Length: 279
Image 1 (cartoon, rainbow, N blue to C red):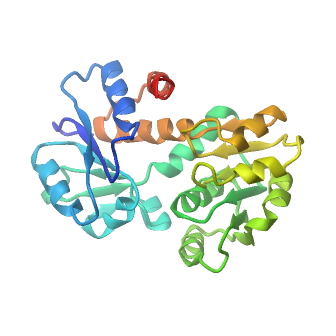
Image 2 (cartoon, rainbow, N blue to C red):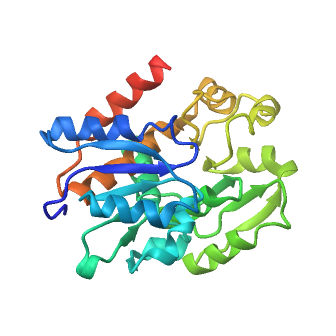
């Protein structure tokens, strides 16, 4: 709940490209929160503490955080939810706690789960994750909540997954880490593939795959869209969930936390689609 506070912001660097202002402002408009504002603020790790203090003093309800601020904020938080501790990242900070304390939350994981469930996937047992970074850790948590406890994780540097494995241990899952050369085989075999890699990283893989992809793909990229992998997947008859779906769902949960109102997901999604179309 906002507790009398008004407005929020998204912090990061670079941040000008962020769709978060579009989504949150669409929510405020639909909810009739005419006195709420939401803006993008350029902020580095070195500036984070001072920026949070300033925004707290201004009376904002909270902020959204991008990487690497999702991790940099952890020492500044007095409390956090279970997912923050498990994944090691907080994409949400709320102000106005007891004695001025800051609370951290992770809406990336429930956003992933909600995006998949809204698309029709209620449970999964056999999963493949492409990539081993911070988003992959959130994917492990989301897949766990959907029932996949031993996903295959395909990475370019299998020797550099210590953070991923540490998060997996906290989450109670046992990923099987494989080199990216095995990606085509793993993708074909999985019930669902979660691509957490940047735009363009799966282009070669898309060309390698044949047209028999009938399972689920969750590609976290939202621009440019569709990725070559998402296009190939859809053309072969598979189900595709995109990065905009994730962005909307995690933002919707932030709106709920910051305003105390039920988020207008349909209006937020429409605003996001319109903004991407104009780019």
